[in-house]
Length: 601
Image (cartoon, rainbow, N blue to C red; front, side):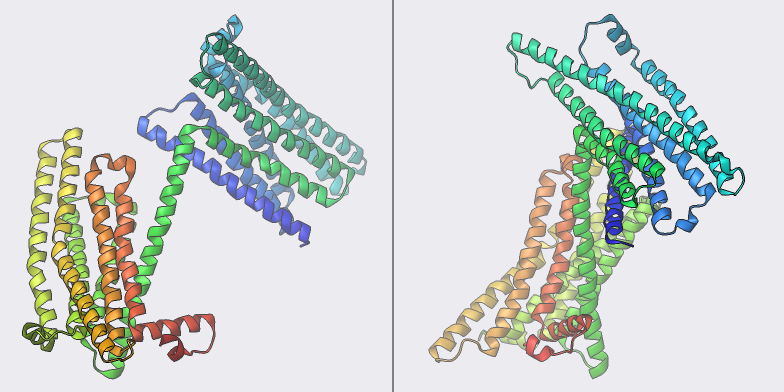
C-alpha cells in the first residue's frame, strides 16, 4: 500500500467513525426523548430518518472502501451490484431528507404574508410527505439505468457481444446524467429555501429596527440557526456533488487512481460533518452532547479509580501473602495492611459486579431482599475499610511515637492487643449501623407499599436515602477523630524528637525521624482524602432535592472511590518492602535489569 493510499485510508476511516458516532448520537437522543415523552416532533422525525440513512450510507462507503483497498477479490459482481444499489438508495434519501429539513425550516421560521406560503405553512406535514414521495420519481429511473448498465457490462466482460462496449459507455453517461439531475433538483430547492430565509430575516430585522427593538429576539435567532444548517448543507453538498462528478468523469476516462481517492475522501466529508453541525445548532442535541461528554469523562475517571484500586490493593495483598509463605511469619503491620487491602479489593470487585449486574438484570437487584443485602454488604465493607485504616494509624503512633507517659508505655507494650480490642469494639458500631439502616429501609418499603402515589414515593425515597447516607457517615466520625488524634500526637512526638536531635547536635535525618515522616504521610493522606469525601457528602445532602439536575451523587461516588484507591498507592510508596516490590514490577514491565536497592532506598 502506497503512502498516499495510507493517508487516504486513515482520513476515510476517521470520517466514517466520527460521522457514524454523530448520527448514532442523533438517533439515540431522539429515541430516548420519544420514549420519555411518548411523542416526537416533526423536525426530530426528519433528523432521525436522516441520521439513519447517513449511518447506512457511511457503512456502504466503508464496505466498498475495504473491499476495494484491502481485498479486491471480494468485490464480485453480486457484491458490486449490492453496494451500488444500496449507495444509490441511501444517498438519495440522505440528499432529499436534508432538503426536506431546509423546507421545514423555511415553512416554520419564514415570515411571509403570501397566501400560497401561508397555505403551505398550515399543511406542512402534507408538503413534506408529497416532496418525499415525489423524490421517488428521481430514484427509480436512476436504479433502472444502473440495472441496465450492469447487465450490459456483465455481457461485455464475459466475452460475448463485444460490440456492447459503446453501448455500455453511453449507459454510463446516462447514469451520470440521471444522477446529476437527481442531485441538482434538491440542491436547487435548498438554495431557494436559503435565499427565502435570508429575505425573511432581512424583513424581520427591518421590522425590528422600525419598532426600535433588539435583534436578539427568538425569531432572529431561529432564522440564524436555520440559515447555518442550510448554508452548511449547501457548501458541503457542493463539495460532495463536485467530487462525484469528477470521480465519475475520471472513471470513464480511465484517469489516475489518486483522483478517485481524493474524491472519495471529500465525498465522505459531507454526511459526517453536516451531522455535527446539526447537533451543534440544536439546543437539545448540544445539551445532550455536553452531558454525554461530562458523564463519559467522569465514567472514565471512575473506571481508572476502580482499576487503580483493584491493582494497588491486590498488589499489597499478593506481596504480603507471598512474603508470609516464604518466611512462615508475618509482622503486625503487614497483617493490618493485608486485611485492609483484601477488604478494599473485595469492595471494589463487589461494586463493579453490582453495577454490571444492574445494567443487565436491574429488576433482580431492586427487590426488597436484594436491596437490604447489598446495603448491608456495602456497610460492612465501608466499616472495615475505615476502621482498619484507623487501626493502622494507631499502630504507627504506638510503635513510632516517643512519650514517657505510663499509659502510653503500657499501650506501646501491648500494641497488638490494643489494635485487636479496637477492631473488636468497632463491631458494636457496625451492628448499630446495620440495625439503623435496616429500620430505615423497612420504613421506606412500608411507605412505598402503603402509598403508591408518585410524589410521595419520590419524597420518601429522597428522605430515606438522605438518612441512610447520614447514618453511614455518622459512624465514621469516631474513627476519623481517633485518626486525627494520632496525627496530632505523631506531630508532637516528631517535634520533640527533632528538638532532642538539635540539642544533641545530631543529624535530623535519623531513623526515628524517617519513621515519623512516613507514618505521618500515610495518616495525613487518609485524613485529607476522607475529609474530602465527607465534604462532598455534606454538599450532596444540602443539594439532594436537585439531584437529577446536578448529578451530585455520581460526583460523590467518584470522590468516594478515590479515597481507597489513592490511599492504597500512598501505603505502597510509604512501605519500603512494597515500594521495592513495585519497582521490581515496573522494571520487569520495561524489560530492564532490576536494581531496586538503589531506587528503593
